[in-house]
Amino acid sequence: MALSTNQSISLTGASTINGVQVATFSTVVSKGLSYTSVSTQITDQDLYEKNKAEVRKDRSDFQTAADNLSDSLDSSTGQTA
Image (cartoon, rainbow, N blue to C red):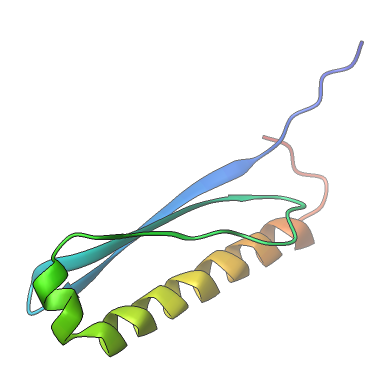
C-alpha cells in the first residue's frame, strides 16, 4: 500500500461597494483540475442590482485569480501536501 496525497487550496473573496459587502466568492483549487468552479453569494441584493457591472467584474477577477492559482499548482513539481 502506498500513500497518495492531494493538495487543495480554499480561496475566498468579497466584492464591496463603498465599504459594504455585496457578494462573496469561493472555490477550492486542486492540482490537476482543468476547471475551477466559483460559487457566488449575493449578500446585499439592493446594492447588487445597482452595481451589477462592478460585482460581475469582481467575480471575473476572482475567477482569474483562481485560474492563476490552479496554473501555479500544476506548474509546481515534486511538491506534496
